Amino acid sequence: YPRTLIGANLAAQLQALMAAGTAAGHEVSVRTNHEVMDIRPMADAIQVVANTPDAPNTTAFDKVVPATGHTWDTAPTEGTASLVSPWPVSNIAALPAAAIGILGSSLSAVDVAVAIAHDHGQFTRSGSGLIWTADPGHDALSITMVSKTGILPEADFYYLYPYEPLHNLTETAVERLVADGTGRVLARTFELLIRELQSCDPGYLNELAMAPPTIEAFGDAYFARRQRLGAFRALQANLVESRATILRDETIEWRYALLRGHEIFETALPHITDDEWDTFRTHLLPVFADCYAAVPHLSLDRLAALHAAGVLDIVAVGEDSEFIASTEGGVTVRNDDAYLHFTAMVDARGQASALPSELPFPTLANALLNSAAPLQSPFQLVLHAGLHKGLYCLSMPQVLGRYPFSQGLPNCDALAAIVAAEMVKT
Image (cartoon, rainbow, N blue to C red; front, side, top):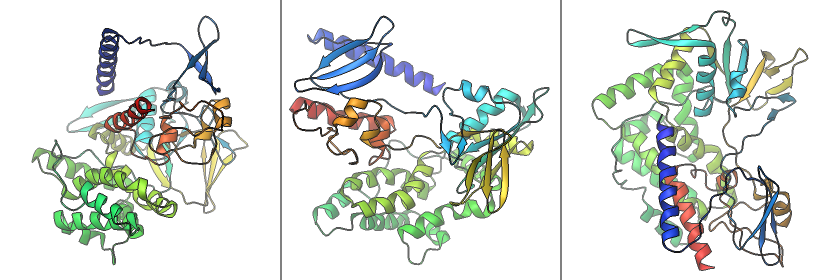
């Protein structure tokens, strides 16, 4: 329902924008049912080649912005195993009432588990909780989430909005440490985060028990409590805490600092080295992504109901696990000499980042001067000499490479403004 409202709102805004542009003397058109097959940079223009319901169409433009959104692999794989794509949703509806694996345990995996449960049974309210009951003939359903950590994301929590400013981890502080030229931008921004947590919620830092507080230690300590409790005990404890604080209009300060903090780290990321980027992606990005992607309480209630019904479990697998195409069909996961067998496994790892060379437009990919370079602001694609220079890229997989928080609507708006200003300037 919220997504339906957002979609309607965006459609209305687009229509108003088109009307305003036309009234101002611009020519604005939206061409639907055009499947873009290729983008061809030429010497004096950029050709967009599309299939349409009527006939193939090639149109020349001065400037082109691929903004293709999420890209779902139609036939994902892991190891030698073939996985099921979560999109379109009819793929999930077609799964039988059998042993189903879900690769991942993030918000995407939660959505997949709930969708499977709806296809094979019913959630009903009993007192203050939910119960799940299988439909007749669907009793054989079992769902197992398979992830590296074996934990679940946490619940939506109360916080003040409009946001209140942070006191230590601020854009001004990051601008100062970038401007002084002494380097170590990531480590010094992390020190600002530690000072923020120390000032707003010292008890939380004491609970993490880091000595000394390093980026690597922080990432491990953040998830440690849920790992100690186990996924479903942690889920229940977190729901109790979140509901109680919401009723009291009480902000959990460390959560609020991390929720706000990812925006400040985002301003530092363009200034860090490749080694720092690897450290951030491995140890801090999972923390911010986990805090940012808090889950609606109803979704977690449904997971708890599935677990109570004996239908849902979660298994942590290490880096050395193997995913094997089972000789009987389906997928086998080998982990520390233990074997898990699934009739099918859904790939619910969410959108992965990709290089510009992986754009689904072959001529454009071949025209890139440096196909291995991550996309950076102002998002203009650098092409071989002699080709038209009016190409900018805001395709989500490519942007995620160095802008990992770019999926939110405000972030999309900010990146689009950068490209619009650059196009007008050039």
